[in-house]
Structures are given as C-alpha cells and as structure tokens.
Amino acid sequence: MKIAVIATWGFPGEWYLADYRPAVPPQDLRKWGKLAEWSYLESPITTHSSTTAIVKALIEERGYDVEVLIYGLDGLVAPRRLDIKRIPEDDVCRMELVKYVDNFIHNICSELGHDSNQGIDYAFLRAKAKELLEFMAKKYFEEASLDIKPLIKIVPAVGRFRLQ
Image 1 (cartoon, rainbow, N blue to C red):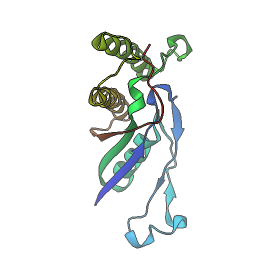
Image 2: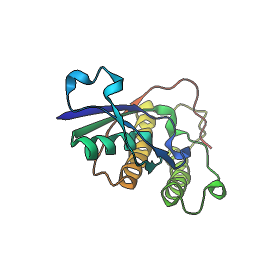
Image 3: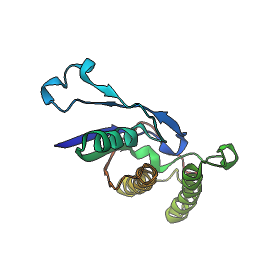
Image 4: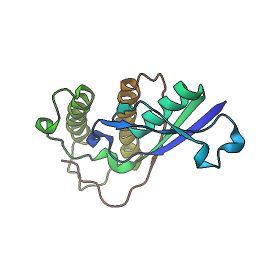
C-alpha cells in the first residue's frame, strides 16, 4: 500500500536526538479511524526528526511504500548561526548540519553581494531555502537509514529577512 506522509518543518538545524515510539496504523484500513487499534513500537527509534521515525516505522513495521512531502518556510534562508560548542560531541549528524549552516550563511551573503536591507529577488530566497531544507532532510533520512528523497515545498513565512 502507498502512504503519503506530509510534514511541516521549522528549522531542523536545532533539533536534538530523541527517542521516538511512533504509532503504527493497523493493516486493515477500516480500523484506521479507531486509535485504539493502532500500536506503538516497543523499541524506540533514535533520530533527530519525528518525520523520519514515523516513515521508518511505516516501512519496517507495515511494509508500506512511503512518499514524503515536507513543507518548509522561506524564512529558512536566514537561519541564525548556531554555536557548535553547544552540540554534544557524539551528535555527528547535527555537527555536520551546523557546519553546513555556517557555510550556507556565508555563501548566501557573498552571493547577494550587497546590504540585505536592499531588495532581493524572492525566487532566489525560495530556492536557497529549498536548498538548505533538502540538505537537512537528506541528512536526517540518511541518519534513519532511509533511502527516501522527500519532495520539498517552500511556503511564505511572516516578517523580514535579516541575513548576517
């Protein structure tokens, strides 16, 4: 059976490792409306993202063919810099993301080549936000040993961008 998992992501660069025990739906579709019929994993899935934990459970516990759609905000284009010293040394995945975000911020400011208070092409901002979210999704799905490339859609956030 094919299943669609639709998720909204804020800024995944700040997510910590956690143990997830997602609920898994019963095989019989008619029982999906009865939450009492759903089961929880006995062993937790340790990952940075509840999305990857849910997808992993659906694939491994039920054998579903899973497609993933992630909605992210265009505001991802202006992430704040993260302090690498605050990340546990054994959190290799997040350490890699923090380094990527620092490079991303540096590169985007260089590409703009001007004061961020001036006008910037919105298509450029959306493309950069998508690039960042695609990288983070790739890392989190790899971390969960999932060979899935989610579809990423960027939607408008509220406010101003401040690139620094």
